[in-house]
Length: 140
Image (cartoon, rainbow, N blue to C red):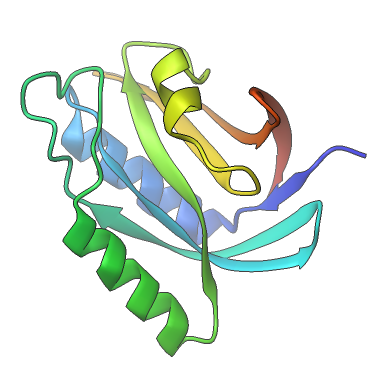
C-alpha cells in the first residue's frame, strides 16, 4: 500500500503563492497536520520558513531553526504535529535530490514544488524508506 498525503486545496494554493513569490530561489517550510494511519497523513496547514542558505539559494535550502521551533509550537497549540517539510525546486523537476535524501527523516512527508517564472509546474510528495525515497500519492 502506498502512502497518501491529504493536501487540502487552500493549503496547496498557499504553497503555490509562496513558491511563485520566492522564485528564483528555493523556498521552504513545514507541513502541520496529523498521521491518521502509518500510510495516511492529513495536512492542516503549512508554515513558511526562511531559507538560511544564501550562497546556493537557487538550488539548496536550510530551514531557519527559529521558524522550525515556531512551527512546532503552532502545531502543538493546535493539537497537531509537524508531519513534513516542503520546498521548491526552481527550474528543476519535483524529484528529490541526493541532498534532499541525505537530510530526510524517515516517516515524514517531503513535498516538492517545481517552479519556474511561469508558476508551479508540478507538485510531488515523497517519504524516505530505508535509504531511498518512495513517492506518495497526493489527494485533496
